Length: 82
Image (cartoon, rainbow, N blue to C red):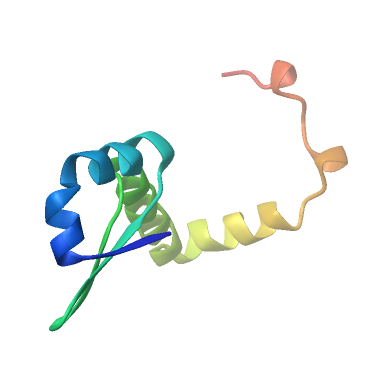
């Protein structure tokens, strides 16, 4: 994560935003009143989806089950009827 002061952020806003979008690199912006973090829209949407899925007890259990399933125990994609 890149860290910058609010003054440097104002000076370099375009390049910092571009790098955040292009590389999903968060920027920690420090000020005398506290800090803020800038993330890409893609990262934000991923976080929101993760929070949504984690808030559903049934889905959360399925995700945890999936984490503990070895690849050998899964069905190859070509065998899945979409």
